[in-house]
Figure (spheres, rainbow, N blue to C red):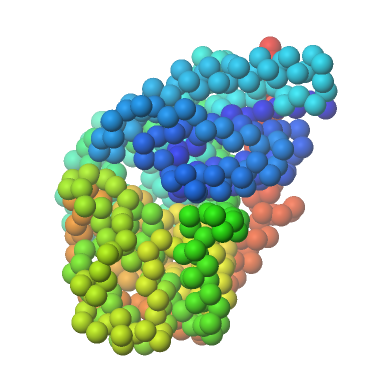
Length: 500
């Protein structure tokens, strides 16, 4: 039986690493001929050790997945700027090349004495932010593929802006950054005209736009793009990409959701926090709790969190609130931190008045929370992983986007699909300045919570229906199952003849 090995190079942030492990597991489950090696860069701002170990253990349960953490580069920790990030990834290229060459040599040696070798090197699958690694694949004369961890709408708008730049000479960031918020654009992949106010932040920044459009150009060099989405969720976005003659083959293989997010090891540093949260949820009635969480780097100002507290109290609903403060470093990107003194930042008496119905936490085991029957709604930052997780578990969302492409995700969920309600779709959080473009007042938050916790709402019914579709699309006969099969067959077709 002909065998093949794919090298997967994820971005070592949890929002990218988790789906990378997920797609690796899906691939090897789908086809016994293929094995995968995940080469994980050990950057200064990689995910924390406990979560890396948990993912490593999860991936390694399948004998055909190898999870290899690369040596840490000894570099002084600077601001996580795009230039610094790309410099570090570039410095890993010779390390990756050496590791892959050693694996190829080892595999060749094993193949001469044992029929159970890992197989021919079939190519690289690189994260959407690691396209410089395509150079390594080219040096080794093997194909490359991209794993795009966001949705089809974001990829569609990215290719559209790249075409405007390269074929029409448009300076995208200059063209769109000062448009009136109510100005609307015709964007391929969307049924409705897209408001300028929800364009991804990266396209409104000159350097950021140039950097990401460079990634888009590299995408087009590859043999295919795997998308963490599915036909039934983004029919127009996916069809637009399939119709793009200049794009490589597109494979919508999602939703890739991490259904085994934490170990049950009491020595795990996160075990205690998770256990306390889950025990509290166990004591709540079904579908009675609204969950608030703004992602791995999302946070709000103290003025804003007081409005959130007022809105929650006015709504009268039970709540689980992941509350974290912005990192203290001015003008630098860093993860949020837990508050030392909640009483000092929340409205006076709030903790006492809501003690029977609410729980405030720091870090949240999001998948475990969303899967709990007590959760009835999710006030979400609309990160793509969070969006897919909420759909998988049938939990309706109230959209409050923060950064990156989240405003566009919110637009898709609210306007295109009717799968979410809006708190404020054009809200933006500047992760460098630790500031927002607006304050969302308590009455808007109260209104959003009440709507999302309405057990008879149309949105809730549509989300439940989409949840069933999510699960069906991943099994034999489902659209994503079929697309994954096509991807694997093309991997074998594209293996260079001199390696067969």
